Amino acid sequence: MGQLTTHVLDVARGRPGSGMQIDLFAVGENREPIKSVTTNDDGRTDEALLLGDSFVAGVYELVFHVGAYYSASGMALPDPPFLDDVTIRFGIAEPSQHYHVPLLTSPWSYSTYRGS
Image (cartoon, rainbow, N blue to C red):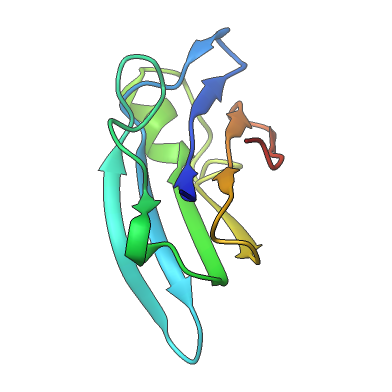
Protein backbone atom coordinates (compact mmCIF):
# COMPACT_ATOMS: atom_id res chain seq x y z
CA MET A 1 0.00 0.00 0.00
CA GLY A 2 1.33 3.44 -0.92
CA GLN A 3 1.91 6.23 1.52
CA LEU A 4 3.53 9.64 1.94
CA THR A 5 5.99 10.18 4.79
CA THR A 6 8.59 12.77 5.75
CA HIS A 7 11.21 13.59 8.33
CA VAL A 8 13.37 16.61 9.17
CA LEU A 9 17.09 16.61 9.85
CA ASP A 10 18.56 19.74 11.46
CA VAL A 11 22.00 19.72 9.83
CA ALA A 12 23.01 22.95 11.59
CA ARG A 13 22.88 21.16 14.95
CA GLY A 14 23.39 17.58 13.77
CA ARG A 15 20.14 16.14 15.12
CA PRO A 16 16.53 15.39 14.21
CA GLY A 17 14.34 18.44 13.61
CA SER A 18 11.90 17.82 16.45
CA GLY A 19 8.98 20.18 16.97
CA MET A 20 8.82 21.56 13.41
CA GLN A 21 5.37 22.33 12.00
CA ILE A 22 4.66 20.89 8.55
CA ASP A 23 1.60 21.64 6.43
CA LEU A 24 0.47 19.45 3.53
CA PHE A 25 -1.54 20.82 0.60
CA ALA A 26 -3.06 19.31 -2.53
CA VAL A 27 -2.38 21.52 -5.55
CA GLY A 28 -4.94 21.62 -8.33
CA GLU A 29 -7.17 24.45 -9.46
CA ASN A 30 -7.03 25.53 -5.83
CA ARG A 31 -4.44 24.92 -3.13
CA GLU A 32 -6.31 22.79 -0.60
CA PRO A 33 -5.00 22.16 2.93
CA ILE A 34 -4.94 18.49 3.88
CA LYS A 35 -3.05 18.17 7.13
CA SER A 36 -0.91 20.06 9.63
CA VAL A 37 1.49 18.11 11.85
CA THR A 38 4.45 18.65 14.16
CA THR A 39 7.51 16.43 14.06
CA ASN A 40 8.24 14.18 17.03
CA ASP A 41 11.53 13.80 18.95
CA ASP A 42 12.96 11.77 16.08
CA GLY A 43 12.12 14.51 13.52
CA ARG A 44 9.38 12.33 12.01
CA THR A 45 5.62 12.48 11.96
CA ASP A 46 3.76 10.02 14.18
CA GLU A 47 1.86 8.63 11.20
CA ALA A 48 1.92 8.77 7.42
CA LEU A 49 0.79 12.08 5.95
CA LEU A 50 -1.27 10.28 3.31
CA LEU A 51 -2.26 6.63 3.29
CA GLY A 52 -4.82 4.33 1.72
CA ASP A 53 -7.71 5.93 -0.16
CA SER A 54 -6.47 9.46 0.59
CA PHE A 55 -3.17 8.77 -1.20
CA VAL A 56 -3.95 9.53 -4.83
CA ALA A 57 -1.95 10.71 -7.84
CA GLY A 58 -1.54 14.45 -8.08
CA VAL A 59 0.58 17.44 -7.17
CA TYR A 60 1.23 18.25 -3.52
CA GLU A 61 3.13 20.73 -1.40
CA LEU A 62 4.83 20.25 1.93
CA VAL A 63 5.46 23.51 3.79
CA PHE A 64 8.14 23.21 6.47
CA HIS A 65 8.14 26.09 8.98
CA VAL A 66 11.92 26.38 9.23
CA GLY A 67 12.11 30.00 10.45
CA ALA A 68 9.74 29.39 13.37
CA TYR A 69 11.59 26.18 14.24
CA TYR A 70 15.00 27.89 14.49
CA SER A 71 13.55 30.93 16.22
CA ALA A 72 11.93 28.71 18.87
CA SER A 73 15.27 26.92 19.36
CA GLY A 74 16.86 30.16 20.52
CA MET A 75 19.16 30.41 17.51
CA ALA A 76 19.88 34.05 16.59
CA LEU A 77 18.39 34.76 13.16
CA PRO A 78 18.28 37.92 11.06
CA ASP A 79 14.93 39.66 10.70
CA PRO A 80 13.51 38.49 8.38
CA PRO A 81 15.19 35.08 8.45
CA PHE A 82 16.90 33.91 5.27
CA LEU A 83 14.66 30.80 5.23
CA ASP A 84 11.20 31.03 6.69
CA ASP A 85 8.64 28.66 5.16
CA VAL A 86 10.28 26.10 2.87
CA THR A 87 7.82 24.78 0.29
CA ILE A 88 8.51 21.58 -1.62
CA ARG A 89 6.14 20.93 -4.52
CA PHE A 90 6.21 17.39 -5.86
CA GLY A 91 4.13 14.96 -7.87
CA ILE A 92 2.73 11.56 -6.96
CA ALA A 93 2.49 9.43 -10.10
CA GLU A 94 2.31 5.96 -8.53
CA PRO A 95 0.10 5.98 -5.42
CA SER A 96 0.78 2.29 -4.87
CA GLN A 97 4.38 3.19 -3.90
CA HIS A 98 5.92 4.72 -0.78
CA TYR A 99 6.96 8.34 -1.30
CA HIS A 100 9.26 9.71 1.39
CA VAL A 101 10.02 13.45 1.07
CA PRO A 102 12.50 14.49 3.79
CA LEU A 103 13.95 17.92 4.53
CA LEU A 104 17.58 18.44 5.50
CA THR A 105 17.89 22.02 6.70
CA SER A 106 19.81 24.77 8.43
CA PRO A 107 18.87 28.46 8.74
CA TRP A 108 20.79 29.02 5.48
CA SER A 109 20.10 26.03 3.26
CA TYR A 110 17.94 22.99 2.60
CA SER A 111 17.80 19.92 0.41
CA THR A 112 15.39 17.11 -0.27
CA TYR A 113 15.13 13.91 -2.27
CA ARG A 114 12.64 11.17 -2.99
CA GLY A 115 13.24 8.38 -0.55
CA SER A 116 11.24 5.24 0.05
